Length: 108
Image 1 (cartoon, rainbow, N blue to C red):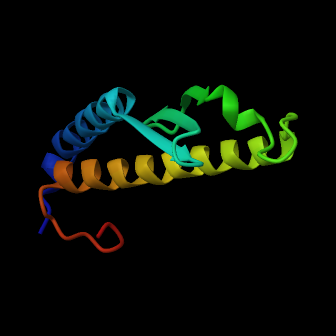
Image 2: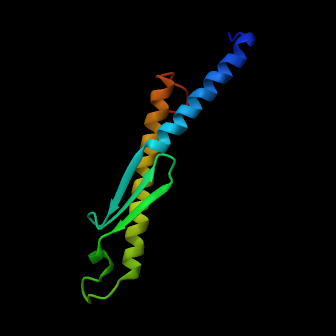
């Protein structure tokens, strides 16, 4: 049973944990790639896109040597989605680490 007199203390601990989590996520950096590394996207654990890198040859069509904008757009989307998935994994790992195995429903 929860002691009602300890609720303010528990809330303060929860706020402190949330601040620590936000700091950790801001410092976590992940990279997603597409096209065998032709395009890479870097984002932090807060899912803020930090950088896009495009190898110059990724913009050219393999057949005509002309820019292939549609293919490049697809590669960028794939790289950003890959980075987003890696950020989700980092977030999940951080949350589980912070909660120390409390086995709360929906977090595993």
